[in-house]
Length: 209
Length: 240
Ligand SMILES: Nc1ncnc2c1ncn2[C@@H]1O[C@H](COP(=O)(O)OP(=O)(O)OP(=O)(O)O)[C@@H](O)[C@H]1O
Ligand SMILES: [Mg+2]
Image 1 (cartoon, rainbow over the protein chains, first blue to last red):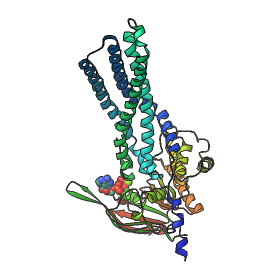
Image 2 (image 1 turned 60 degrees about the horizontal axis):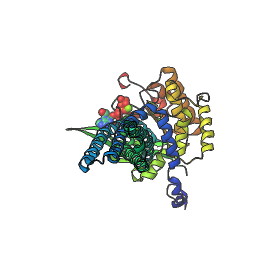
Image 3 (image 1 turned 30 degrees about the vertical axis):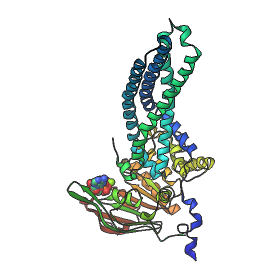
Image 4 (image 1 turned 60 degrees about the vertical axis):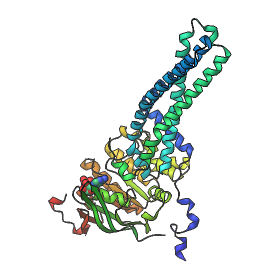
């Protein structure tokens, strides 16, 4: 029967009726996109760098103070709160710039869907971008924050601040910082990216800022 | 398998609810586009041309009615099949070109082939070949912003052709171009239609399009006003 051979009906050709966008392609696309939209990436990265620098800086100072003066529990938790509040303030900035970065690409997202992209592919591109910006911004922020924290004590307490116990906590703080940066960056991107990716292409294409 | 009709619409309607009022952008369109036909939709601004383009292209959901592409009801497709349809069967061309701004001409043309699963070498070879065919062999590594409007539209045509679509849908492809450049684009679409047998659907205000179209469908307020073969066309001034 002819109809069985019809590619539309035939079960055996079902796999071939799928579009492809392997993560490796999505990753390459993300890197290119960051490189070629460097200023936009920088704006996002700056808010991450600031936030993480504050956090890691305050935490580092708090650790150093503990090993020099044996800070009280109350003072420690006060310092933690300061660090968290600075993070929250910066999170608002990150959210804002991520929202802009995704929204201004709505039309591009609509175009990609006309070319065969599925919602998940779009989301994947944005997630890679968010992770990259998060990790790079977080790393820079962590180093800057740590330097700031350490430099304050470097004159008087040279031997204390490079003790092996503190070295471990520095590394922990910086790791924390990078992780937080990644979470904030991905968290701020996921909703706007999901929203834009699941729009009908017609709506996305009509979208103007 | 070759189908007699590349596109069929059945009582196709799209309503928009704007507060209290219902805007009937499309209101019962029955249309059959033969394989290999060059069909133009004409009508005044707001008559529903873009809406029809979106419906036929599977870019938006109708309020009522059906669209068949190669005899498949596209409302029955799942997300995978719909993406595949957009990727492999249809090429889209827009008034505003809609190239990806951060990608070069070459990369813009290879993008749909990535989704089609074409291997890298083959993608490059094909993209260069198509860009040569549209006369942009010397602009492969230019970004859209570094190209003129006409050149951008030619990249868009090359991109639309990347996966050998059965139909090319164009929404005012000459809307942002001057007379001469517009004519170039129209001739390119016609050539494609004649030589490759690609079905062409354009929504347009451009009277130059009449010369190359096999049929012209005039729409007004979301309804088909009349359908004419090229030889019969008489244009009233108020219709443009
Ligand atoms: N997203 C939308 N929401 C509400 N109304 C809409 C929407 N899209 C289109 N319309 C309405 O539907 C009607 C048809 O619009 P459409 O864009 O299809 O016209 P058109 O023929 O393409 O016009 P033009 O020649 O100006 O491009 C118009 O009255 C328009 O206001
Ligand atoms: Mg229109």
